[in-house]
Length: 115
Length: 113
Image 1: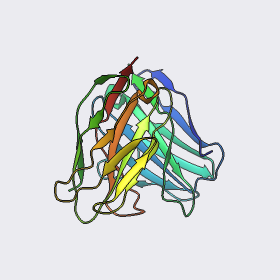
Image 2: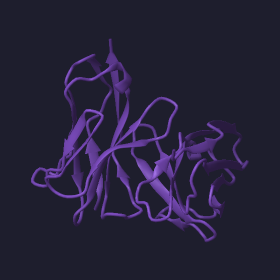
Image 3: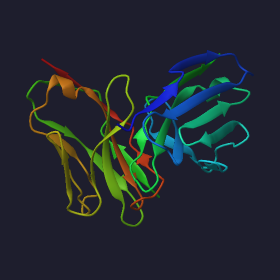
């Protein structure tokens, strides 16, 4: 149990376009979802926290207008990278947590390459 | 501030060898400490955790002891198997139940037969 999926696993897009990444909890209801970003040979950095039905809370230094997060249902959150640029190329990982549970369950990640 | 430093890999070991992956941390207050493992093509999975000083987390033959005096949480296993090949992440949460997880850079372990 407690499986989280991400789609797509890899995406290549052109500079200036927008890309949407989906994160789904497959067998539990995720009241909270988290989005992380990982640069090569660096730690995972928390970007934002989203609770179902409310606006996401962004970490300091993360542009909310660039990284749009929607958590419209208890099993789906989306991250849209708007007007992507090469410096947005990275590995994006989501995690999900059920109500009353402290453990986060992680998705396999999405590698974004902006050309 | 809060941060985690873990040994850089990659680490390559023969089957049945002893494993140590070092992890030290900096934190304000009394953090909880975690080891996560990521197998190829899968998401991070919680391997073990410890929530207070001197606690020992253990799972699947892996162990780590929360050492406040040395601010360390080193991961050990007495006899590794090929199936242990994965990337291991040390992480801390500034307080129990907090949203924030601060991760180390990850250490890739390859176990050869």
